[in-house]
Length: 261
Image (cartoon, rainbow, N blue to C red; front, side, top):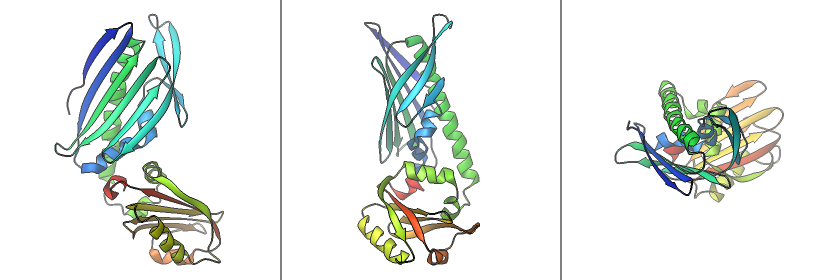
């Protein structure tokens, strides 16, 4: 694990701060997936006042810590195979976090760049932000090791796993599905054919009485979770027992399966 380093450049009262860090990684590409979840990154921000899907509010102290100011940033994110970038922007300042995967060295590279005012306060905040990212990532990595014996089907019962799955995918279909009139196997075949260019496909269905979650990798069923009448099922056979009108959503991902599941 390398030590963070920082450069500061003053020009017309606008400051640029750059920090970089490396994190050792043993689980190849799957290691970077934690950073794809926006809530993990936002939760690592110091002095967080509140946030929505596209806004983050941070508190800073000014004038010898006697006065406080709240900064509201517009949040945008982009991600692809092996990288994710977050941008926090206001009228007079911006923060950019870039997380990339170095496959050869098996390292996750973190890069933070800040440009704007309040240099003293933001310098401290960014250093703490970087530290929090490393600590929280390593904490969840340890949790992953302790649950390595889980199957994909048992993971589908976890809301945290579903949140990660959805955050790394895109919604490609949403509609009603009446399984009293339609054979679910036909629906699945048609869905997989329609979205065959995506390596990972996640199908979610629910109504007032039941919920089903199906995960496919390269067209092959890898995980099943069904809850009906208060009971949980993890087998493919239980899929044929589903009946009634369901709200159905389909999520698909172009990322490699090992980066998603």
